[in-house]
Image (cartoon, rainbow, N blue to C red):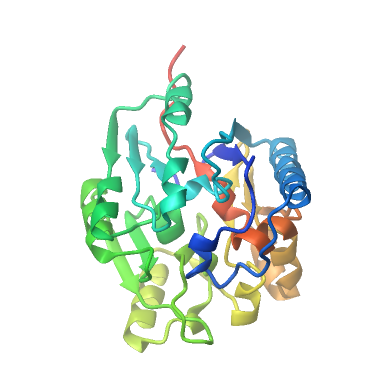
Length: 307
């Protein structure tokens, strides 16, 4: 089972802007403007990122968001769906009511033209009981070793995590992660990234020593070189990275320009020994919606249909 894929699904925004429903527990949303200029800037950043990924050899599958109803966070499709090598597609329960319209059947139907889907698992009904798990925002997945890492938050409930892990035959490590204001980190993927043979993580955010040791032990057991981030670097979206591959098999690490600037020379050197860094500028998207490069990419591990 592979850790990375060259097939990436992205959703181009048409209603981008500050989302007050997600801002309730997303400390990374720092700006609150909603206007045509902000949308145009976000679309330009989106298009620039797609162009950089394609130039690097990634197969980017772009879908346009639908204008009605308005979905200000639709640019982050990795929160509502995940695609797996066994032909499994999973839909997830989302915390913000105005994000639930992002689950578009039309996107899944379009992907079925190219990829083989064998089973759809829909866990969105957990929303009715106030239980959430926001896909690869909540879960950092080690696919070859069948391990899920996740931090507890209002968007990540163990009940749903346990069910998903059982369906996939994975084990999971659940831990607390809090910022300097003792507020829970809302998504695991803002503080942790797993590549093929490395882990980028801010261990300083884990207050429980036993949980921190369990995470480190598991990373070491699965032969991951740990690149430790500071809390200041997390605030610059340095944890929100994703390793992908080109169609030729080249290893690429995608992060924002802001995240790249925050890395120390030693950190950057450690990563560049393994991967080529792709770092589009995403300042508008980061400031207004509190997510970055990793959040914008949903990995498609589904088997391709044979012609």
